[in-house]
Length: 179
Ligand SMILES: [Zn+2]
Ligand SMILES: [Zn+2]
Image (tube, rainbow, N blue to C red):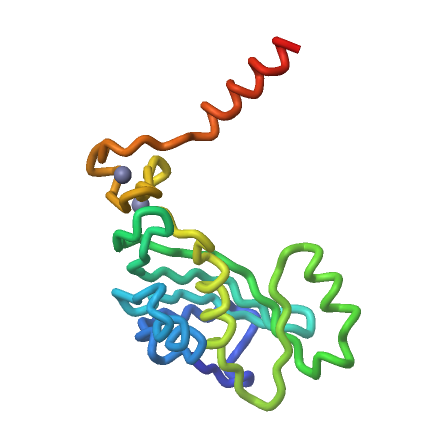
């Protein structure tokens, strides 16, 4: 996932590769928590070109991930993908604070590199992490687990009596009317 800066010209260079999630330290760490499991390698496509003193990287990443539903706790698989544009500028973060703010407003990723080689791996891993749901759901309509007996309500009613928000709300409305 590295490219020599000298090899980059104003003609976009297309890089296409597959890398296992283990090749990305931050993704390997994520997998170790057990919350998500990478089922496929990361499929990455990049177009790298030189442009006005910086390097422009337009690309996409796709990967299949197994999550655990935050409501019913059943594992499910989902395809995660992200399209992005990143700008690499030579120098250190401290020197170029102003540039970074400007680019952030446009919702573009601005990165600084030093030396004669750029490694895209950390930013690609970051793109994947940003796409991960905070509360994964197996489906929009997931009914979750019964708070009383723990049964998976997607598989049918368990027969427990559960007080729902709607019941409470209508009771409150009646109370106000009576007053
Ligand atoms: Zn679910
Ligand atoms: Zn129940």
